[in-house]
Every structure is written in structure tokens, then in C-alpha cells.
Length: 197
Image (cartoon, rainbow, N blue to C red):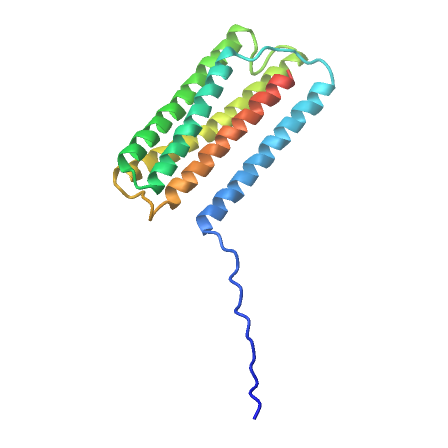
């Protein structure tokens, strides 16, 4: 008597992403498109002529160092939380929040340097459009960093309330993703502006 043996393949589980993570990545994609459009418009307008060549403020260099350092401390906070090193996580996330705030303040000094160099948001002639682009790009990034600092404050509060640990990393992971994105975005914008003055 023959026995029929049927091999039934187990259904593959679909690759799933937490809805909040998906929403974050969707938001990041939107921000990327906005800045891609702005930098494209910048290049097109620059090629039309009557473009004022300008020097970037020295504070942009300082702010770049600050935001890079904040990305390192953010990673340190995330790794520490994964290892349940709560005291280290508290220190690292606090430093990240302080550095993020320092970046925001530093941009005010950078805009002050632009004004000192007679580069204004709106000037008297067509050449002033280059200054307008510079302000709009840096202001728009600055607004996103404000939202990033708000997320950092929420995450810092969560860490101090002992709600972020190896078993509950979603909030801190999303915070780290967004903060690293803001860092990479600033590096892109800074290099772009350096090469296209």
C-alpha cells in the first residue's frame, strides 16, 4: 500500500515595517524631494547669469562640525540603549540634544555673518537672488532641525523615564534615523553650496 506524502510549503511572511517607521520614511522621502527641487532650481537659476558669487559664512563650518558630533552622540545613545546602559544612554542623548540646540543657535550667527557680508534675503537687484536661495535653503533645513530637536527632547524624556531600553527601542530608533537624516541632509547642502557659489 503506497502512502502519498504531500509537501506543503509554509507561506512566506511578508516583509513588514512598523507603520510609524513607514510614515517616517515617507516623510523623509518628501523632504528629499523638496530639497532636490530647491537645489535643482538653484542650478537652473545660477546658469541664467546675473548671479552674485558669495562666500559661505564661517559659522557654516562650525555648525557642520556640531551636527556631525551630534550624529556621533546619537549613535552612541542608540547603541547604549540596545545594551541597556541607561546612564550612558542618558548622557549621550542629552549631549545630542545640547548639540542640536547649539546648531540652531549657530545658524543665527551664520545668518548674521551673511548680513555683515551684505548678502540679504531680498536685495535691490537681480544678483540678490543667490542670497535668497542661500537663506531659503538654510532656513528650511533649520526648520527641520527644530522638529528634530523636539523629537530629541521627547526621546530624552523617554530615556530619563526608563522607557527606552533594549526591549523598547522603536522611539529611539526613529529619533536616530531622523537625526542622522538631518545630518546627511546638511552635509549635502553644505557641500552643494560650497561647490555652487
